[in-house]
Length: 384
Image 1 (cartoon, rainbow, N blue to C red):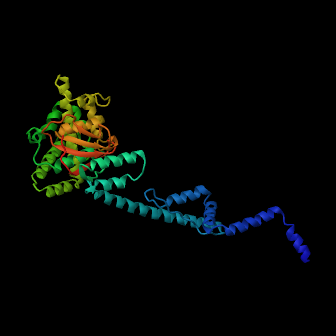
Image 2 (cartoon, one colour):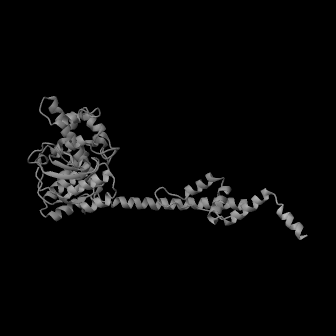
């Protein structure tokens, strides 16, 4: 009988041996993989598992949270477990989304428009650690800038960075109101321009995009008055430390800050209209004015407003030629270190190219002509 039993076991068909091997492999298979396979079968294959996985995963969370169901030989019990997990996951996901939204809101409320000072070389080391040609060029550029300036202040990048960096620098070194801001016609600009150019009513305000067209004059007048008031307050402060603190405080007030940018944009429009009319009347205009109105998207001030100035802060920032316009509007020379142009004649660029001798100078730094940061603490005298 033992011999017959042995022969019978030896004669097991190959397919049965395969089944036996499969069972053995399943026993040796990690429990996590078995749970995953069982879940796929229970919820309709990989697609069903992915649906549950997606409920437990949030795009804003770097950690993927997967849910596995306990094994069960009872299909109805398994379906009940799936439904229960889906319901619990939905509730948990809602709570997490609410928590993430709250965190984002609170962080944006306290996000600084202009970050505190940081050593230039430390900033460079933090931002450019690789050994690519671009990284080497950036490091070389930062090392050259460090010969003139000690610190850098990062500026928030929200398509207002050129206006923000320029205005912050101008205010932080202001000692008096600019002459053009002292004029009685300064706050009458919106009313005067609207009386001549009806299309200015289509000016797009960030703070109130749904405002009535009749309100545009009063709102922009308020922004211009706010700019004059803040400029006067900061320029009256004699202590450099207190002046810097006043600027920091001003650029923490989001409502006032964006109102100031609307004032700057309107001053740029006013300057563009003056340059356009001067050229039409045969007067001499700077070269950048030809380039400004040579674009298909800004052949006149109306197009400039619609396609460019209205988009600043919304879908785009300042282009190169518009940096010239900003400089002329403020009557400031904007000196920019352009790091990607390191070792070329364009490494240091001035807007405008031939500035007036009595125009104050603000100094910015850019890696790509799109985002601008601020340079502070000059190491030695810089001659224009």
